[in-house]
Length: 232
Image 1: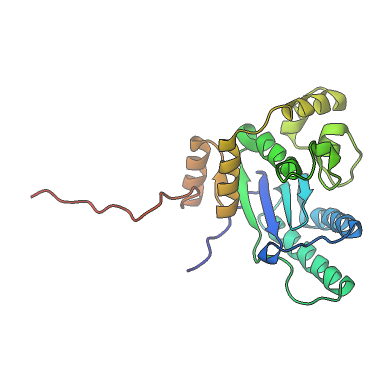
Image 2: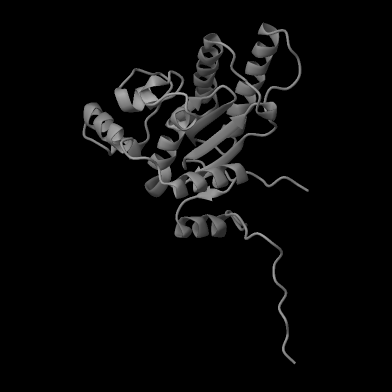
C-alpha cells in the first residue's frame, strides 16, 4: 500500500513527531540533547524553518515550526536525522537505524489550534509523569515561551506575540494558559492528526485545504463504505 503523501503548506504551522525505532531511546545523556538542539538550530536556518516550540523526550521528539518552502521540513529532518544518527552510533559504538522510519506531521490551523498544539508539546513531560510542572523539564521550549529564557533557536509565532504588548505580558499570559489542562478531546485530535498526517483545524479550514489539494485531509470513517441498495 503506497504511503500517503505529507500535507505541507509553506507559511502554515506544522507539528512534527519523530520517534525512536521500536520506541527505543534516542537520547542517552545530557550531551546528546545539547548536540541535537545545536544541530536543530543549524539545519533549521539552513532549510528555512522557524522553530516555535519543541520537546525532546527520551525516545521521541516534537517540533512545532513554520516552513518557508515546501521541501523545508523534509530537508531539515533528513540533515538533522542523519547527522545525529552518525553521532549516536559513533559515540555509543552501535550500528543501524535510530529513528522509526518517516517522521509524522500535521498542518495546524493558526487561529484555532496553534497555542493548543504548543501547550500539548510543552506539557508532554507532565503527561508522562516525569515532572509536575513544565518549567522543571530542561529539554523543552517552555522556559523560553513561559519564563523568558534566552534562545537563539526559538522564533516566536505571531499568535504567541499577540498574547501581550511586551515580553513580560506574553509570558504571563502564556503561563496562565497552563493553569488549565488541555481538553481530552483536543489531545485526541492532535494525536490522530499527527499520526495520520492529517490537518488539525476547524471543519471550514479542513474543507479549504481539501479543495486546495484535491484529496482527503481528515481521517475517514472506520469500516467499508456502504453499498447503495436500489429500490425496484
